[in-house]
Image (cartoon, rainbow, N blue to C red; front, side, top):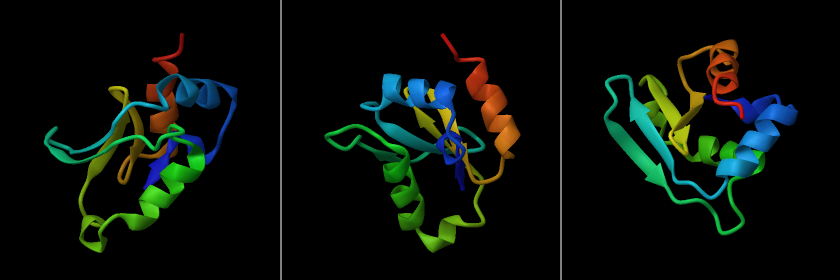
Length: 93
């Protein structure tokens, strides 16, 4: 699974700061919710997202799903990194 914060830049840092207290939602390709994670008290950081990725159940490895924070696509286990960056760029202020 990749997150937009895996290769941080000023835009992704600012975006994560804006939504760091939002609930993280994992959805499959059909849009069904697989899981939701309440933000840590300090808000989401790249480290928290990395830790979350390490804790996903092994049976999810072969499933296609996306991660959303504040309704924005921030991660995926089947999309390419450049696709995520392109999606996120369209959300910039």
